[in-house]
Image 1: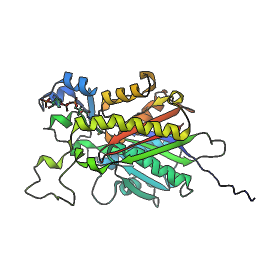
Image 2: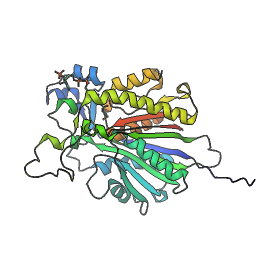
Image 3: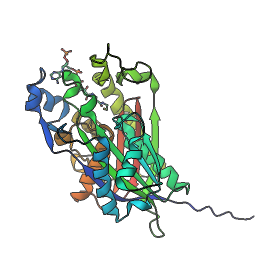
Image 4: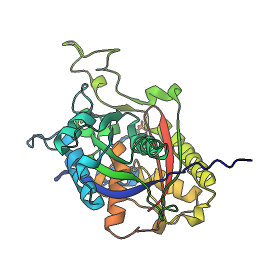
Length: 338
Ligand SMILES: CC(C)(COP(=O)(O)OP(=O)(O)OC[C@H]1O[C@@H](n2cnc3c(N)ncnc32)[C@H](O)[C@@H]1OP(=O)(O)O)[C@@H](O)C(=O)NCCC(=O)NCCS
């Protein structure tokens, strides 16, 4: 019988980068804004400070994305002209139209690449990375820039102590490229994405979309900011992130013991610890930066990945597991070897 050879392509991470704004918002600052305390915030979330894109710098989401992307391109030693697609995961785009990816393309000088935003809240980077991998594995593109970026401070209600202590701004980026001969064991080994719209109201912004547009009457309502039922989201987050992690491990035929580093979405220190405990990961194998950056939604995983690489906690050959969970609800996991 004739044997058909199919070229199996893999998608490797060629470079990473990140950007965090210089302005620090501490728990002491928040104590002056809402009825909260440093003790409560640290105990319940692990967060000590977060970064905010200050209004006195005329920067938006795309500028943070470009700063992270430039670092990732330099790391990959790649000219922007070689990018064939740019995917930007964000729920805080510069504008409703056009996509932030279009603006990033222009600012980077990466003309003619495909451009699109991916909206999957805190799971956005995991979603975008999975889409990029699918493009590469199927042979459509060779080099894809994937960015997770948020200016959550622009959709945070700084009078709502339930949410304003959690969120921060920032951007992370990765260049995903088709693997070269000899790199067969590197790159993304397996992915899993899921979601459940029945929980859409647990974490949402009720006002300002096409369903309920902003008007002169409702523009001052808290509904234009993020609302979250933290307690419910917390329960589901631990369960579904653990399930997603198990699935990608099974998909690649490896065990949790083989993983060098868990780089989870940074939503809450207690969620990260619960996940680590369930999967038998000690603190030495879990990357945490939530104390310094808070929850930066889709930016949290790529910022953490870049920090982990640049600090030497992971390097060539490391097996890394990333899991995330967010509004939608959405969740997913990616297993990759650097
Ligand atoms: C938001 C979160 C930190 C709240 O922690 P929690 O332990 O669940 O706290 P609860 O919601 O049960 O609230 C406990 C009490 O603290 C109060 N509280 C909430 N925020 C507070 C704050 N910043 N300071 C002081 N008290 C606060 C609440 O009002 C509540 O008071 P009550 O019991 O009198 O009603 C936590 O639920 C969480 O991290 N949830 C998941 C977030 C997440 O994963 N999001 C998805 C990705 S973005």
